[in-house]
Length: 608
Ligand SMILES: Cc1cc2nc3c(=O)[nH]c(=O)nc-3n(C[C@H](O)[C@H](O)[C@H](O)COP(=O)(O)OP(=O)(O)OC[C@H]3O[C@@H](n4cnc5c(N)ncnc54)[C@H](O)[C@@H]3O)c2cc1C
Image (cartoon, rainbow, N blue to C red):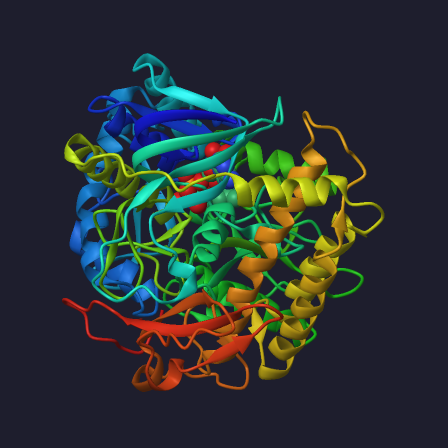
């Protein structure tokens, strides 16, 4: 075991992690730990854009952007956070421009902007051009730009190091730490892929920026590595996860594959059609049609298929039509995604419509934080020295449904804030003593799995998990489907206790790490399903066919999911509708809730 000491340790080198690193590393000794090489992080796969009310091509302002974000999130958004994001968006884009990001330009030389779902002028009048972009490779450009800056600033990276535990000085998971009591972070434990060695990083401040968890689903736009590690580590240590039932299904995944075709395709004029060639979004969202928010478009598509108007031999997808656009325009604005259609489906988008169907895309929920990036352990208490930003976090700017291009924005705005807060804290805070034998839990788990003889195969359990989530916790949900998912998860968890790997080596053992990641996926899936079962209403990305309406009276609160021991009598402040406990073999999932911050906008019915 090796030990290291840094003022700030950042876990994750995607957009959020590297933006935080740029802030922290100039102020205090900072390390970035990442299981992937930084430039392989999923931020690099982002296509369509990053929004900010620059008003470069038409009238716009940050207040309209705030409103759209709140309405898009079906009023579960914390409005103070949305306001911060929309205001700071403008500098976030200009910061990237100054760092050298090659944005597309208007003929006058300004940063060009295009339309995206749910972004409107004057509170819903018409779609507005708010998304800044670099063709359909915006995330790639952001990731490369931030990485170059990190290299220039000598940020220290620990690449292919997997963080597998979070160290805090109180056992929150035991459920007996009183409200108001001071809880401090002391560091993290990591596993080095190349050597199999364990490293303990003592740190005054830790920033989690580990990204999303799309791999709980089979049909997903997410990379193989998005296994919810940071969320699961927090959850196992007794930190609640917020609003996990809200998962976004992006309307336009390549049918049958889930590979993403950016909403930019519709922003540039693409149209969705059913088997009859009808532009069906005119019926569901008469004002902004194909550019309605993702939850609405995804549901409308799934509904067309259910009602028999799907295209193709099995009538199981709809069509994204770009054939009316000039090929030169497609090549200039959408080069990568049209190439995906050619490569993976053998379709020529110049002349043929592309088969598409919703694909699991984005976790609206995550580790609860305030607008400074500090992690909350209940409605009000922060954990001193612990921060989170990006898709792993829930601040909550996306509420129950995120608008397209608001995530690349979120990672820049709140990555910066978390990095700055962590550095400021670490500049004066002392190191907190590490627990005795800090790596025991991690070492024991790894050795048990590595040395186990014949057992359950990782791929089998993962497939079963993804299949039940696709079948039972997707765009449409019911009490019955979710109860089925929960039963499946409970039995998969039992099977997971016997998981084994074929590769027994001590170095470069990716098999072993996939087994560990599968454990994270199971944790995340159970918080999604239990939250969804309890939320007997429909809001944003969570649609219950048995409760098709939004119910502000009972459910206009954030869900908080806590893992507690079976014996614990701890009942987090969860009132009324959130009073629910789900018993698993050797622990229980206790739900609580947290209030929604409302500043300017009272909840209204959501129409587009
Ligand atoms: C195909 C696709 C297209 C998208 N397009 C857009 C778009 O156009 N606009 C938009 O706003 N949003 C888009 N999104 C969403 C957006 O890209 C992501 O939400 C965002 O980039 C997430 O950034 P992040 O920094 O939080 O995480 P990531 O970029 O996913 O980075 C996570 C980091 O955490 C590290 N990590 C994870 N677990 C561990 C561990 N256990 N130990 C150590 N390190 C760990 C990884 O190595 C990685 O460096 C898109 C997403 C996808 C999948």
